[in-house]
Amino acid sequence: MSLLHLESVTTSYWRGRQQTQVLRGASLAVDPGKLVSVYGKRNSGKTALLRIAGGFERPDSGCVTYAGKDLAGIARTELASIQREEIGWVDRAGPHSGELDVGTFVALPFYSRVGPRKARQRALEALDAVGADGCAKRTWSDLPDIARVLCAIAHATVRMPKLLIADDPTAGLGILDREHVCGILRRLAENDGVGVLMAVPDMPSMLQAHDIHLLARGYLLAAPESPSDGDTTPSRLPSDRRSA
Image (cartoon, rainbow, N blue to C red):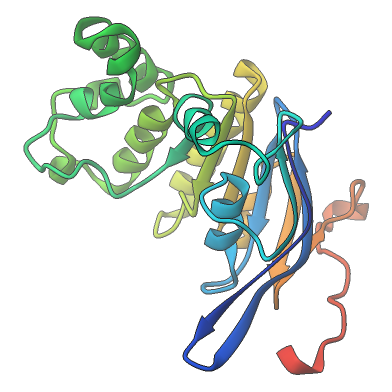
């Protein structure tokens, strides 16, 4: 059974009287220990897809199940508990307070479980796991972009979630830094058994994923499982004159 499963998910937004179809029957699965990437251009609907996957938004139609539970059918308190304890969201925005040091920021999600001292120790372990242990005493504004991404991953994984969701974690990074970030996410999946769902803004960033999807014109297409001579180009988009 997949950790996360989206089946025929459809959603749309209204802007005034104009309706925009964001997702058209999107389906994907994320298994424990797998890194799944979704490539799409800006405003293609990647963030909407991820928010629906995490239960933060409900689709117009279709089903989202997490660990066998239909997210639309469980109580709000249970959903909030799952989002708080079992789903990590990689957010590059950083702490609200610019004076908060990175170690404390990373530790915050763990405070409610074990208290400040043990949470701080766990934060240092999470930072060390992504190669950012030297950032613990620095402030967010002090960090270069790559360090912010690594610290954001540590913040999202400090609670040891079962599902990790990362929205464009490689955006704006150079090619070597993109490879580094994707390599870390893949290792987190394989070594810790985490299911990782990642949206990426460029083609090279998705090549380390176990499963690759393309999101365009609301359609989510999977790349071939065994592409010939390295070709990971997804199959042709369905015809849709309204989206042309």
